[in-house]
Amino acid sequence: MRMLLKVEMNTETSNDLIRQGAIQGLMREALGRIRPEAAYFTVENGCRTGYFFFDLAETADMPSIAEPFFMRLGAKVHYSPVMNQEEMAEGLSRMSGRG
Image (cartoon, rainbow, N blue to C red):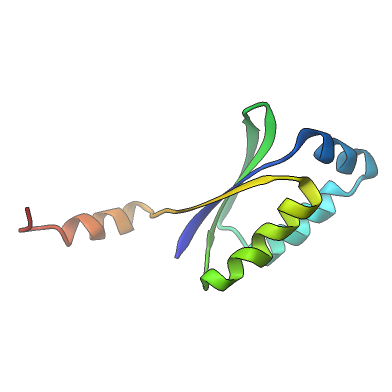
């Protein structure tokens, strides 16, 4: 299932990791695990925030994906199922004749 993973990083913790030169390694490791089709970084609610679009093979993978962000960044993590344009069209076509 295609998912959006939103990671809102704790500012103090992420500052420390940047000073230590460790945040790039953490991101490389985390992104290597989830292999996102797209990754974007911005600021939200005054915090460094990453948006990662990836395929979640099994829901049992959710803890191993989220825990490094919780434990090493003090992050707030949110998962949302998402679909692309083709999947939206397919879903709408399945509604034909209903209603």
